[in-house]
Image (cartoon, rainbow, N blue to C red; front, side, top):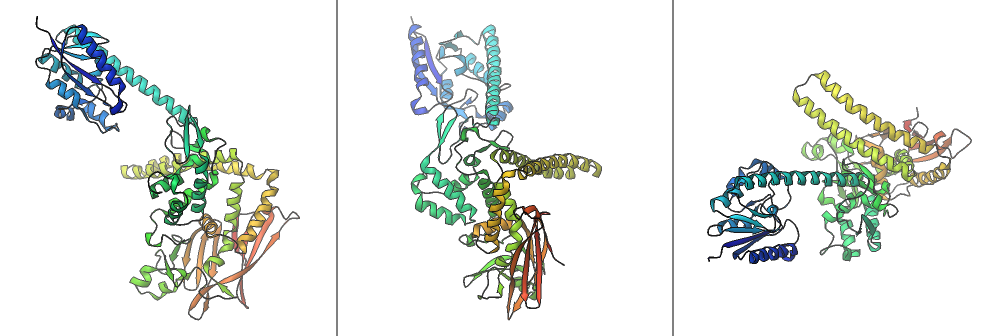
Amino acid sequence: MIRQKAIVYVRQSSGKEEESESIELQKRHCLELAAQRNLEVTGVFEDANSSGRLYPSGEESLARHDKSFQDWRRRQTTEKNYRPGLGEAFQKLAGNDYIIVDDLTRLARPVSGSFLQSLIQQKLVENHVRVLTVKDGEVNYEDFGDRLMSDIQSTITDNQIRIQTQKSKDAMRKLRDDGIYPNMPKMFGIEYLGNHQVRVKPEYAGCIRFIFDEVLKCRPYNAIIADLNASFLGLFPGKCCHPSTFKHIVKQPFYCGYMYNSDGNLIPARQMQGQEVITYDVWRNAQEIINRKRGANPRAQFRPHPFTGLMCCGACGSRMVSGFDSGKEFYYCRSGSDALKDAECRGARANINLVRPSEDYTGLKESIRPLLVLGLYKYLDDKEMSKSEMAKVATYESQLAEQQTRLEKGMEIFLQSGLSEADVKKAAAKGKAKIDELRAKVAAIKILAKSDPAREKFYELCNGKFEELLNGVISDGDFELLLRKSVKRIVAFADHMDIETVYGDFRLDRVMVRQYRNFPKFTWRKVSRSDNEKDLSKCVIEVTYIYDKNKTSVLNVDFGKMKIYQQK
């Protein structure tokens, strides 16, 4: 009696190819079944780490015309496009009586609407090959009943997979919205302990704090990375800390106890509760700095440039750029000075620090310090908010940024769609109402925070910080941070500066000393409108700019009104 012949096909959808125990187990079961049926095995074929939705190699043309398969394929991240093992098995079908598999899903788990199921059935029928399974018995696709049952089973299996996949997505979404990473991403200095538990590696915490401290000092990225490679080299994977690693760390809110939910909004991260490496305020300020420095001039990467992007020429309106000469930094109108050779544009040049030491005059950086006082008050006020209040503010501010982006994109779409002006205004009103609502929530939280009686200590802190700022005891990083929070634009002219701040506008006249245009020094005093000098809401900082013996200008910094204005 002639022995019937069979080939064996095994497939595993996940796992490492080089140590795929499941594949070996399938092979053993299939070979045992062949021995029981006294079948001669003519070949064993396998596909490791391959989805049952993939076509066999050799059928690329049909796969390209299968819309359902191609739609599914575009959503996948795996690099595999076909199953070479199944392709080889199909080439060996002729002369065999059976193809042995662990179960029918090893042959295929086709996408709904795909041609794959029909292709496999056609190949087997053409070669008069039946399917012998370890778990499901024998299937003959030449038999109408077997073919119908197989199609029904495939449809049911595909539907079950879709239902299970959706349930899994919903469960992971719920975890994420509850402040827990369902699949913990790899993060510098964070160790995953299992069961959604994490810990901060103690040896990494200092490095993370160092990175954020240096960013808040507004130091150039390359300088920070050079220091990291000098002091913390052993903590980074590979040979050194790369710019991509550095930026990934700075952008990660997990270090301050926050994460993004499924809608992209910031929420408290429960896994980091009590393990925060930095504060939310530090992280938020770092984001402002890195967003502002994106695309900065690489030729000036080792020098701070606090005024870059803020200054423009009053003569031609061009943005002013930084220059460096004999150790002194200045800003000038490159287009007007170099290209147009315009005298007024050349006159707008401003020295950040005094070119020659003087008891009477100073540079722009020193002269502008009083305008930053209200920015310091707001900055400290935010820092003094409780953790629960800050969590709410963080969530609302994240939602506010998202709403503003949606409104801007929506307006572009509406304007391009040819709708009437009334329809566009109606659509914009809905988005603006949501934005106003979120702003009101943020303001309400901050108002309640200010009513806390314990804020007496905060006012004492403010008083000390104001003195440091006005007396020039402030780091370059803190100066730039406050400058960006307070000043919107500086328009430079030959004889004065028009300074636009978030708290009001101010004209700062310049002083001509021989060929140099300098800035005036100032004196200041604190004026209280009540008996309680610690009550900043009733205080005014009176700043007097001294140009010469006959000319002065008085600037008032009013905490009650949160405004600055010149005294008339």
